[in-house]
Image (cartoon, rainbow, N blue to C red; front, side, top):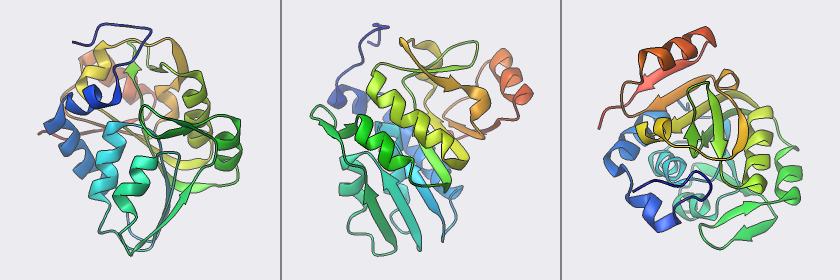
Length: 198
């Protein structure tokens, strides 16, 4: 049960939420990433699923603040891996803090794969951890094309810290059909919706 608007579920519980949807989202998002490009991947169980689907890509550079993403991709010969330094969050292997933001700000990449904890009806992208949010903001700022991956539950959740707005996203990959109002909001902000059905 996802009920709190101020505290996220722990990592193992989040892995169990919408597993079929996350697999479908991961496949579709990975299809949008060509070989021979650079990309950021941030913290999250859905972004980790994208990493699994990228394993056979060639000539890509992945920059991440997620130890789990490194573990997933470290045996893929076609992928160069760079990991941010900073404070390691023991709960999920995320690397956060000022040092991680400084590291991300050294790059300008082709794509970003980002996850969020919640998306509200006004299009605000929300999370629970301010230090994680600062890294996500740096990733968005330093990417030419931002792909947000989110299961449908994110549209009914709330969280207290603002990452940004849907207008900063280029493509949303989601595992169901959002409401008419949300689709209109995306259309008004030139956000392409990719529906990845399980």
